[in-house]
Image: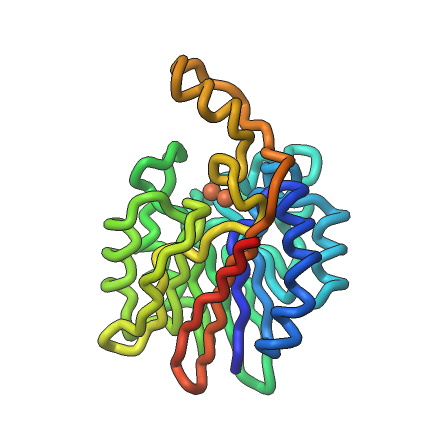
Length: 252
Ligand SMILES: [Fe+2]
Ligand SMILES: [Fe+2]
């Protein structure tokens, strides 16, 4: 079974990069399941009904989110759609699904999105304990975890904690692809960050002149997108039968 996981599709340029490169990547790698991290796909903040439908018609099977999962207050209904999951380690009463389970040729593949706690703002439950709970309560042949986190140490700690218990731990959120795609000692596929899909330059997708201004002045501003320049498309291909994780990094 081959799973294509596409990293944070960032704003309109991310959708443009997705539309430009996804068809040929799909053609070349022939995935059975496609997962997209869509936490920034709707103008930087979460997901909308229209974008959900667009991704589904293009052959995406599951959409994971992140710290921007709840930013689009007028489209919170999307969180309950069957192929969407928000980070599972928010507290009780949080809208949305904790995981997505798909059936491929009689095998159940469960996709879980977890949010890190180091250098992140939300006061959330432990991703370690939440994953323990899901592994006890959810029956599945394979677990694919999108760990949406900032700190590489937290990502490696969770990776070592989950090795041998999940099929893959895939990092997202930093928007910068790492080169450490490896198989852990007990067989888990791992990468610290898939990277983003959107503008190539910019400040992790944000406008260059604004980003520099913010660092020079220290005055906070809501991020504007960078709308100029070449694109990038970042993904990983997980082959569960051959137990291989391959990076797909396209930089124009
Ligand atoms: Fe992101
Ligand atoms: Fe994020």
